[in-house]
Image 1: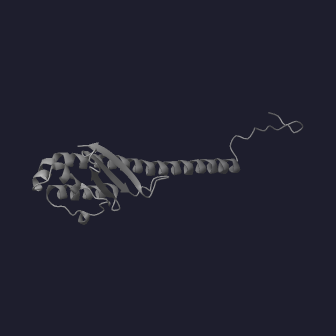
Image 2 (image 1 turned 30 degrees about the vertical axis):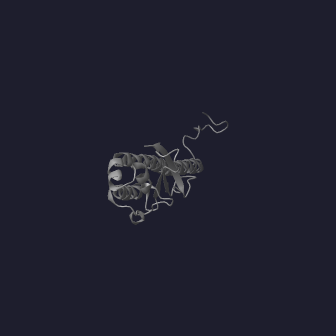
Length: 168
């Protein structure tokens, strides 16, 4: 293109200015930081979901152990029915360490192993309790609760609780 009155030619600017490049890099950096923050939150929430799934599986594991050891638990009691033995699983307070388990035999071994599994899966603060036959009407009904610290998840509770009710 000719410049009027000069006889010379000029071409329009072919590249980007330094300021345009810096603004583009700034926008890209902000976007990448946002993506990194979203990724970190997603990882925390995935960990919380994994812990909730593990807690549900652990509640079912103790119920199945109770079903499997009903005969053994009954044999350990001399003159008590199976229903009267099952409250040996019960503890009004949470079991937070293996030394909290005061019963012996198959029942005690099941509970100690369960508490170890709780803490291995959900952390050292995890505790569990099993209450069976609270009333005569629901003698075979057991309630298993597990609590653990889920505050690492976004909006998670420091005392997350999962409860499962099952009939033996």
